Image (tube, rainbow, N blue to C red; front, side, top):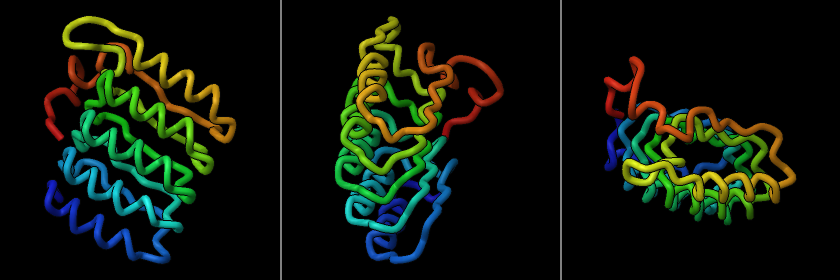
Length: 163
């Protein structure tokens, strides 16, 4: 696994890379800091089309960094943030990034507890996501499976693993 520190090194490489089109970094324990380093690098990357950061435990802090990247990046067309422990605040931040991005065609947010605040259901984060999807007319496909209950937090074989 890469870990947070390796995420920073990989982010540094991405900020100067001129021909890499597709990066798959799922299951690497990047966490918030590693994900934020990659997101920061991609603010200025004008080539990368597809980024998979699934199963990295980015949380709300990492989601905020990705959202900020989405407001600046004009190349990324496919983004997968599935299984990243993105909660209510992360959903609100991501909605802002999705709303303002003009290049994104596909976004996967599956199995993030965006409809949960503490131990209670709170759909306000999901409402922000839905509103952003309504306003972004470029998106062609969206993955929102099991975002109400928290998905991988609660059940199934995947719940045994801690990315």
